[in-house]
Amino acid sequence: MLVTLIRRYSKPYLPQILAVIIFQLASTIATLYLPSLNAKIIDEGVSRGIPTTSGKPVP
Image 1 (cartoon, helix red, strand yellow):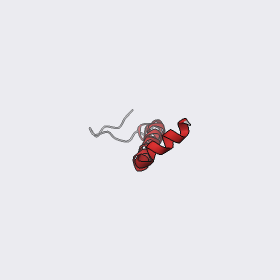
Image 2 (cartoon, one colour):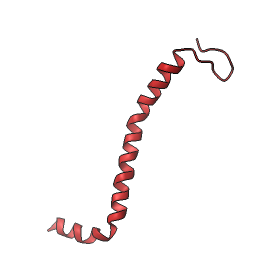
Image 3 (cartoon, rainbow, N blue to C red):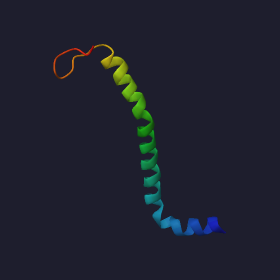
């Protein structure tokens, strides 16, 4: 009975509900990807001694 009520009253809002689900999924993926991206930047950039904005290489 509860599922029937939810379906009936949420039907007009289906595009908004789908948009929320898609944006929430994108947010979760971005949040989980960020540490991997930071690790790659540190491993490939900082450890190689790429010069900083001051022009001096990172030790």
